[in-house]
Length: 149
Image (cartoon, rainbow, N blue to C red):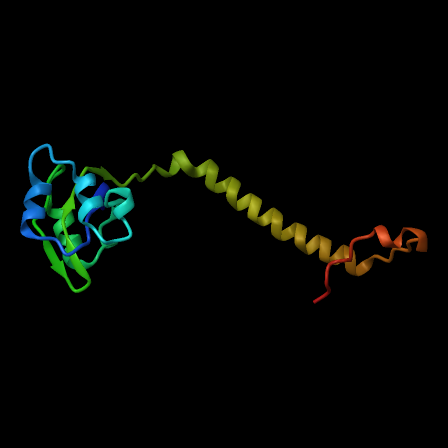
């Protein structure tokens, strides 16, 4: 079963080993350090990437992120597009609901989709077989008919 990381934090910047040690220190405010040291797009959010699935990140980062324990902070890692420090805030299992629990929702969705298809077919046929005369005084109030294919 895939695992997801909740609140994976990554600070992409030209980080020094000292920054990594600072981020890994017990009680360190990882978000504040990311905001101060990072130059990535996640800087303003304190380096927060949000939930990611295994395989969402670059291979090196993925391996590192999913190898860290919850609460763990990585050393500085260099990848071709920058330097990163990762902190894992939480892990959650993918949720797979039993079929019987979602059966009604699936059936409703399929019925709704079929109804939309049938309604479109009916309306297309009705428009093609119908002739309507509108008095000239009222013609300006009408919206144009749907285009014919």
